[in-house]
Length: 509
Image (cartoon, rainbow, N blue to C red):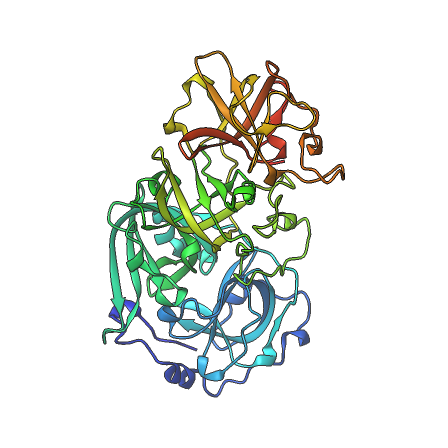
């Protein structure tokens, strides 16, 4: 079975669904996958079969239906297992119900082997040949590749149709249409130290490159997506904006009001500052640089892997994430439950500037998405309290010193003289004698009423007691931010306090 297609021939040879249907007419697929003997062949084994062979296999969804439609001219999806990946073609004229084909779900499928412009595919024709799990699943982390490795995929064909990632500098962004002025997407030419390569952003994957001024020649970008074969060449096809990002550092140089795409590890938990109407969080790169992601919707849900705000993943030791980390943004303690898995998020938002000139991102909570990537916890830097400057804002920082009483606020109930009560939490000053003090905030949003006294206070902290008196020592880890003209360190979760230096170096409790 052969499909003929090339978007890079300006789509003049792009076959319409009716033509695709004609090419597969006359084939009768076998019964549904449940009739097949176990164990089923792996995806790599299936790809070795001859065109036209009817096979049954299984895998986990890695690309949703229709994401590559502008490239492939059909509405298929991709599967992945430990052996490799496989693309499943689906003619839209068949009207198959693919609504349950969600990322991470287990699929058992029967179809005939085919070819899509040199790409080995499986052709699905009948609804009964598609069995989708109702729960459970697995998401594969993208495997990093240089552009040279992507171009040489023919030497490692098992990587075809798998989810990969690469980083490079943009050489050019070229709009591609079908030859009749109907846009299909954008070809992004990239360069890294190994050579040059291509990523294709399908319009059908909800890419809006015209709204992304950061994506221009010279920009450094990270691209994740399915490794697609187009004739004799290979390219990465991102599955959506969540597969594209620039570094947090580069985002800081983007003008106010412009959209950015960034990813990183959560530091300050969502809802920590809910007392003052802020439901956002801090996002950090592995080097410790970070940025505030501001979210103002108190009822907003951040988006899960497949974008429907529902959990389709069962717990299990084989999962690459901790299910307990899925929560509402309105939950006061969502990401601080477990330190085993760093929480990796992708954010689409608009840049803005604080009073002191710090940068932050204004985001819609539904454009905050959990991503399956193995990102590191941010590196923490130790700073003298007298040396903290606006250039340190956004970083993950630890401070060590003696406590002093801040101005303003109300007295802490119970006589903690070094702390005062404010609308968003409890504040103190920390001073190590180097010529200046820094304000420290323990926000109400990281506390839970663990002792049942109907009050959020320090006794609710799992590491209580902590230092509360003037002159007593405290070491604090957290997110350094500009709070309306005052630099302060926000204790990002319950596990970021110490009563003495060096006791613990965890960041998310």
